[in-house]
Length: 397
Image (cartoon, rainbow, N blue to C red; front, top):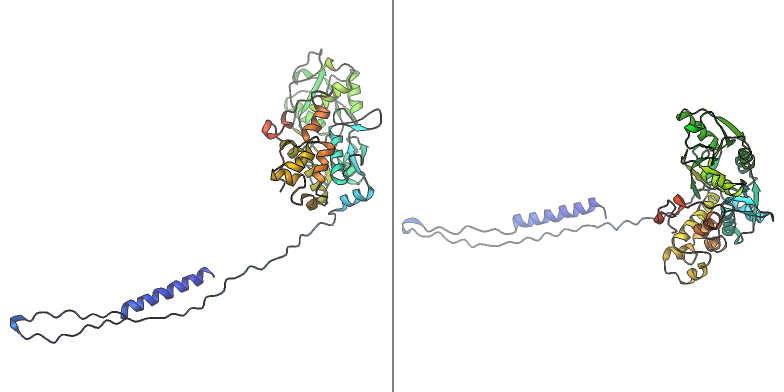
């Protein structure tokens, strides 16, 4: 019933009451005592009349809201990547391959590192098997073209998230940040160099085609420091030139400087990273635009590693948690309740497989960049939000 119907009923009821009040009760005033003993007039009997007004209203039936089936339109490319990966039987993941702690080639031909383990986590979500990954080593110049042309399914290669890269210009989407970093400068410990101004007139080694190269130019111009860039195609060439003394300094993400100094330079203790940060460098996986299903899968694999660490679910206790946890979020995460996997086009145990086979974020970090590794980097911003960092996952619901 609408508000207008209720107003009409109220008006008619009020009208009925007014009618009843006006004609219902008639009373003749009491006679006055005649003056001078005159004979009293005849008494008129008072008659009380009550009128009943009956109003009949037709009350409309309550309106019912029809059930509407919403058909969600999907872009032409939706689902194509997952279908191709599953049909091929493995994931092709673009990596650096030369960066200790993040992705590098072991003597036995296997790849190891933080980025490599996120490739494996994605394979675990799709196949329930971390071995179903083909690693494709890419230079900075090759990486975006390889992804755009479909040579790789995903790029997980210490790549900085920027507006121009995350747009139609390159046709790419960043699926989140797995490592928050900042650009730094490394110099020989005995060089006497301590500030940017000390690099006046010097030569700085840098990789070509990176945000590192652009950031260096911006910061030096802003500080009016003149320098000569020595530009190289890849990690080995860049740090090889620096180690040979062809540059006064080398610049890159601080994580890269730290891992290379400890993993590739002959005397790591003979080098130091200056106490200056040139930029913000959020690093994370990249996918092609046009396939939102694949974009969602990569994104939620990352969130799975965050959420599982937050809720204390690890590769060592995930089976126990799946059988005994009373936390609704954990139940949905592990596929005990709900159908989170089906919403992504995966099985409902996809996140369980990620955690069981690749580990939570803390395990992945400790295995590759933790205190017990040669490439130790303090977690800092890469801690969970409850531990003073910036990592947290949206809800699994």
